[in-house]
Amino acid sequence: MPLYGKEDSVDNQAKVALTRGNGAGSVAETIVFVDETEASLDENKSRGITGPGWWAYRTYTDASGNTRHKANFLMVLADAEDNANETLADDTIAADVTSTISISAQPANVTGAADPFTGTFAVTAAASAGSLIYQWQRRNSATGRWTNVSATLDGAVYTGFTGATLTITGAAKADLDGYEYRVKLTSDAGAEEVISDTASLAFA
Image (cartoon, rainbow, N blue to C red):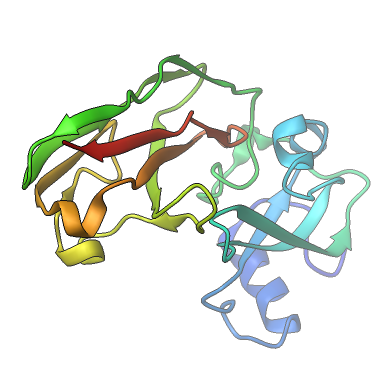
């Protein structure tokens, strides 16, 4: 029996986390069990997970709004059990099956917006497995940095920023004229991230 166990279980995950020196795992990382099937999927390879065993994984959004992945191999398991007995909720990190995202309708530019502006940007997309996860972003010019939209950003004018439709309510021309918007899409089945086209907001 390997030091950490070759099964996907909460007990084995806790053992790995303790040897990592951070108790139950740090806030920034998740201890993940990857079986032979998961290790073969491109979705997981794109996250830096390239072999069966135990991994410490974390993700973050960099200063340019891009998603970055950091995966550290903790224990190689040549005979890691398959996911038939999976107990850990880690499918967004270690996908069990091939899953892709397609966008059928991109966000559209808004031109001649009234001041103040109330309106939406929307995307129509589908995942071949699981449910979509949305994160809208905005930047203040074509050369600016992308920032995740949140409830408090730009004077709290945004709602729906983790859904298919981003709503902007009561935005002033002086604040948002020329801003650009896009949405990053993943899935709870671990699909590789897809980013929509960019749409702009231009006031009259």
